[in-house]
Image 1 (tube, one colour):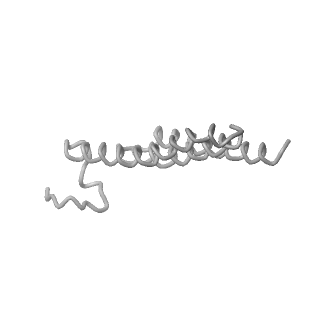
Image 2 (tube, one colour):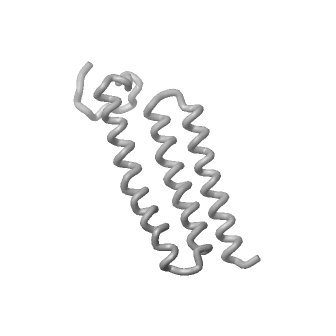
Image 3 (cartoon, one colour):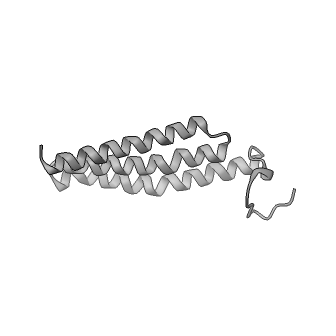
Length: 109
């Protein structure tokens, strides 16, 4: 077993662990905003770790390039999507403003 195999195995297991923790957070957290946090942060880190674990296994840089593109698009789209969903939920009244620690929208209830 080579060093690259060990590094890949560790990164893949760590990525799977982060994804599992994110899924557990989706089940356990009580409201939309905390579930949204669990759906974006650990899942993004988990996917990045899985992609980093796959990269040494591809064998060439040209084969690993699509993995880099997936990572970049994940880093761009996940925060934007989470922000958009949270904003829409807040504006539609799904989120109770009284539960927020800090409400920077400037609205008064």
